[in-house]
Length: 88
Image (cartoon, rainbow, N blue to C red; front, top):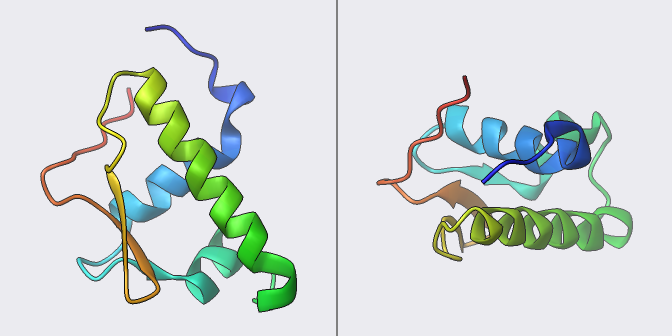
């Protein structure tokens, strides 16, 4: 599939952040500070984070990846261990 990275910048940035994160993934505070450079406020950022994760999952499904490449557990987000992101 062909896609324009400028159409999905947050998805690409989120995937890159998750790829470089430690094996425990990122919590909402880390996502917020690294993706938007803002201090996490659940009233402001929870919806933004959920929306960004949902759109990123949809982007991956459109590229024919399984929908569960991004996992959430105990409030932390991470890529499935067998998923490797390579940007060329």
